[in-house]
Length: 253
Image (tube, rainbow, N blue to C red):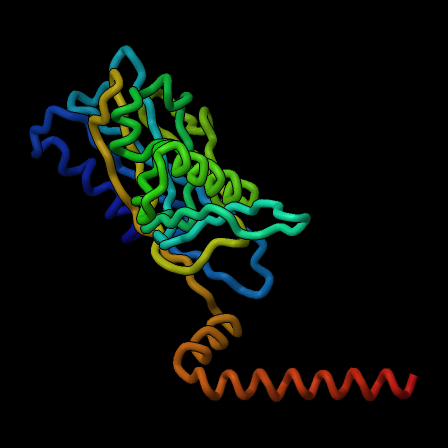
């Protein structure tokens, strides 16, 4: 009930604001996602309402873009090259702020909603991500490495684009479903919603999502972080014990 009241509070206060621009009232189906041993991925529902100053949707429908982002990482991409029949590392590029997870859904294809400049400002699309290169590669080379990173994470389900996946009902209510891969890392995530009219972002809102481990996985993560020496010794002892047990069984067979 409290969550519903917080979501409806902007609607109740709207007549008092006198604002001329529309506003968004977004929410997500889960504010916390727990990763257990059986976690095989999840699907988040991003939904909400568009509130217009006069209470009526415009004749020309607006567009909605939703973006789900994970914690940023510093990453080095390396390119393999075959030399004398052996694959070795060749060129490389380092990026300071690559999102560990990025998913975007829109009511129409992005190039039909906004121009390239606006898409770059709000990072709407995999090719518009600002990865902050830290190496002195040529522009063409950086673009190749960025495309390689996007392709690699797309194959792992960590980079997702779904044009046309946002459903808008009566020009007011919207919803979109975005998948969470089993490979997602723990940490704070953000669900951003953008309202676009005539190629211009007129409203934006953010909801925070937390992905965390729980149960035995959380205990093991805490043990590795808080007692690294003891954790390492236990791991070595367990590996030796399992090796001895496997050898013993093999000798008896």
